[in-house]
Figure 1 (cartoon, one colour):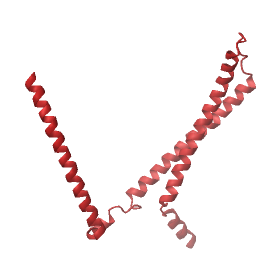
Figure 2 (cartoon, rainbow, N blue to C red):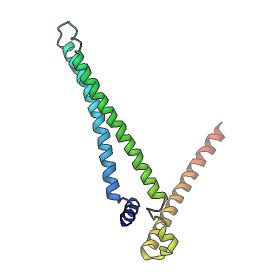
Figure 3 (spheres, rainbow, N blue to C red):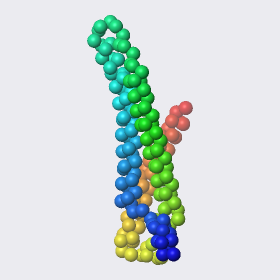
Length: 158
């Protein structure tokens, strides 16, 4: 009975931000590395053909052997499968992050609901935001005044 209780609490555990950031970094690195590997296989064949043509022998380079082609095909299959797997893991990670956000793992509004919004730091942040809003509003009004006069001038000229 204790083992089931432990499993239930372990499954309800919310991953930390550090873990999520590390996972995002690892998955994006995997995607980039696998794509680079695919391009390396494709460019390796192209560079050998280009080098043979640039040598000026006049003869076309010999076609790759069946073994070389099979190896390249296998490498491309492995890399493309790895890219698909990494993309699926990214999708699972985003789904997990959405669930954490939606179902209470991130209490972004908790302080608003508990009335802690009146602390000195939050009050200072609110004042700063109000000042920023006023500055943006004044700038926007100046822009509109300038733009409206430009419109009136162009409309009168026509």
